[in-house]
Structure formats: structure tokens, C-alpha cells
Amino acid sequence: MDNTGKEKEAMQLMAEADKKVKASGSFLGGMFGGNHKVEDACEMYARAANMFKMAKNWSAAGNAFCQAARLHMQLQNKLDSATSFVDAGNAYKKAIDIYTDMGRFTIAAKHHITIAEVYESELVDIEKAIAHYEQAADYYKGEESNSSANKCLLKVGHYSAQLEQYQKAIEIYEQVAMNTMDNPLLKYNAKEYFFKASLCHFIVDELNAKLAIEKYEEMFPAFSDSRELKLLKKLLEAHEEQNSEAFTEAVKDFDSPLSSPLLFSFAFSPHLFLLLCLPSSTPHP
Image (cartoon, rainbow, N blue to C red; front, side, top):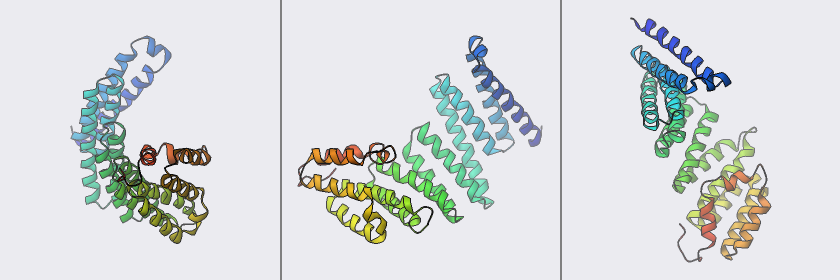
């Protein structure tokens, strides 16, 4: 069977697997062998993935392995799920090699993002997710797709802060802020990125945070009148005075459905609470 025949057979298997998954989720399907349908679909996705591999359609192979992996997870087959996700990653990497050789860097970047998403949500290996988001950002920048590059960089900044790599997070947030502050459509977001960079500075060193805030005000005057800056100044003052009540009040005043994620879902906010409990002479965590 030639490559075209293998691809055709693989696509037929994918279509059959899709039908079985859909049937398993129906009311009657759930009553009559829902799990068996999922198991059959899982096997079909895996067979399709291997057929795509033989046809050297690496992107399709990666997608099929991901489908199989998610069904393995649904069936509580965690080891098989992890193995299938790894197989998917390897297939996507093959596709990336081909696309970069062809000079199709935007498609290669999208594949890096797909791999990064597998590492961040399925295999939970944040370091590897960061590496793939960084590579995607580099490819996007090379193609002058700056908006797409910034989205990847923000992922890198977020996870770097989560891993307590604060200096790296600072550099990323500053870079994205500078990329957006001169764009009429995006400049409103710059204050958020300067705010997050300031929080990272705050965790590392209070004096650096003050100096950074002054620099950001000079670079981006709109930051001076922002609620984010007012909060930062209140937090700095509360830290100097070792006043945890003032800190809590400042956060409460700042809180809103739109703004609260900036503090409460930002991974390192617990460190700020810890900071306020430490004597001023104690090195920051």
C-alpha cells in the first residue's frame, strides 16, 4: 500500500473512531456498552496514528495519538495515556523538522504550541512547556507575527514566575509591555504587564521594585494613573510598615471581576503575603 492508501485508511479509522466516541456519549450508548465503544475508538485512533506515521504525515499522526491519549485518560489508563502523549510529541517534532526545512515557520510555531499545551495540561512538565513556547515565540517573531509571539511569551512569563524564576519573568513582562505600549490597539494591556513585572521585582527586592516602578512610569506615562500602580504603592508601604491589615485592605479595594485574576490567580501571590510577615531586614524569598 502506498502512502496515499495508508493516509486514506487512517482517515477512515479516524472517522469510525469519532463515530464511536459520539455514540458512547449518547444516552443509549451510555446504557449499552459505552466504555467498550471508547476502548474501540481508542484502538482505532492508535492504529490511525501508526498509519499516518507510515505515510509520513506527522501532523496527522500527532493529532491521532493525542485523541488516543485523551481516551486512555478517560478510561483511567494513565500509563498508556502518557505514552500516547509522548508519541504525539515525537510526531509533532518530526513535523516541525519538515516545516522548518521548508521555511514554513508559522506552522512550525503552531506545532510547538501544541506540544507545549500537552506538556502543561497533560504531562505536567512546565519546564518543557516553557521551552516549546519560547521556540514558538522565536518563530513567530521571525515571521513578524508579533501578536502571536507575545501570547507565547506571556505563557513563558507566567510559568517562569510560577517556578520562581523571577528575573526571567521580569524580562519577559518588560519585553511584552514594550512591544504593546506603542500599539494603539494593545497599549492598554501594557500596564498589566508592567504590573506583573513589578510584582516579580517586589518578591526579589523591595528597592528594585521601587526603582522599576519609577522606570515604568517614565517609559509609559499611562501607568502613573493606573489602579495597578496605586495598588503597588500601597503594597510597598504596607510592607515597609509590616502592616498586614493594610495589605489585605489594599487587595480588597483593588479586587473586581476583571482585575482579581491579576493577584489571586497569579501563581506567586502567596509569596507576597509571606513577604509581609517577614522583618524588613530578612532577605526576601
